[in-house]
Image (cartoon, one colour):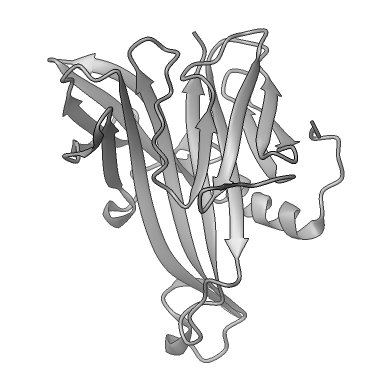
Length: 245
């Protein structure tokens, strides 16, 4: 695999730079409370939560072993400062939780604006940004299920990671493996950020060296998905949070 020592083309560097230093959404701690499974959904810079994400960014989607089920309840909490999603544990082997968001942003001489091209006179770039955060809650810690909800997906071979072993993940776009594609790999304990490439088969292998949470972020911009008077491309970002056994 190609690590962070591999030179990165300028466009990929720019795109990931926005992701690192701009806002991300991701799913944090998973815990039980009064028979419910609860998950924090967080929003901030460099994977440090700073405030709850906008309400229209926080659209939860939940799957169990048999497919999509009722969306979880949600509320804003102060610690950590973000959203808490909760749902009744009905005994499924695997629950897969997503948080979806989409919005169109325009850049002009004055900076970034939320809106579409036709509403601005001098547009440098306009993009539709689709962000997805994903977390797998597996009863045995091994079975990752088989849910593929997002257009840009990260699918692990196991639900939890093991220290001393490689994380094995497959990246898909529109259901097809995405070969030779950069993935940002973030170890929460050490705050180390590395870039690794998927192989020709779309599979990423990342060495897990210490316990804790890991966040994997993949981005893909599709210039074919545009609307002439609204946006120039659709930029997808998917974030998968995993923990060690």
